[in-house]
Length: 473
Image 1: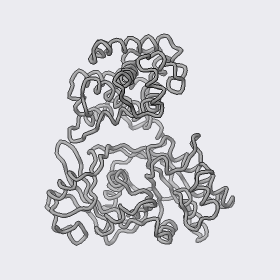
Image 2: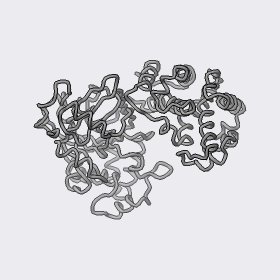
Image 3: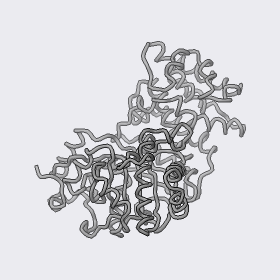
């Protein structure tokens, strides 16, 4: 079968969207570290839309630790198929990535970073790629950072590469640029900027001052469910396009990208692709954390207790879906001060539609991982606000109790859970009061009689009946 390439675009069926611009006229204005599935499903698709109006924002991908993406995309001229999973699946060929460089091409990476055409560097390298310590600052003892600071010929870390590129730009008399983290990391821009500054100070204090004056690190948040590519997707894409695609990508139709409006130079007009520029990324982050992630965990722990396997199956349970909507609208939303431009009611409605999307198989068992790390931010902060404001907390206590029941069930059956505090949790098993006493999770909430009583009522209701939450709200 013919492989997807520039030459094959004309053979695609009419219902397959293709780049709405002349790819030969595109200039690479973006360098992206970590061109994995999420970037290609999300940011690269946004730039693909922008290129139809402004050809100066093509992407050069950089994959430091793997050659697989380069081996898949470079023979396809950087093209790949994006499947948008909704009531009806749509297919779109993305053309914004011109080439993917690997760690074995250091000269080309440095040339891309120091090109006069490059105005933006973006990253999706996962939290560990930032080489931060437990306090969220650059870990100078990290082997890759230590090697780079010792004068490694070729940088081993993303931070080392960023500083090397900035050093070359300064040497060439070029201006600074904007470096934009797109990873799911709170205050991602601030943390990235602090890491780059810390590295530069160790390497060259004058360079650090130049970075301080001319480089910007805006915060950002991103949101879109991106299931992994599998053989079923490859078969669907092959059937729909009539072409062989080595690495198609899939995601839900919904996408959100919010960027702090703090750029060193020209800002790409990504508004045309639905991107939001704001001075309050934190407000959007808080809304996502509480209104999306909190209900996700609620669905996971309650849904698993009821025998459901996926988010969509849990949402098909009308009693559970109704409970979650009331939790969002009546208990979580009052804890938020939305930033300008964010309509909480509309945002809640959009999240509920996403949860009910049967085209996405989002497993509750996976969402249930790491509850001791997730619940403090997804649920407990909202609970603290409700307690402080004197609002009812019975519904908010339910996901906490459902998590406790989840632990008790695992302990009783002798099975395990995925959680960094697994041993401490399973030792306590059904002694929910002992789990509430774990300060790293609950802090001072465990000292609040109203909170403990509300959790106890919910725990007893769920112990008597997995659907017993319904009587609590």
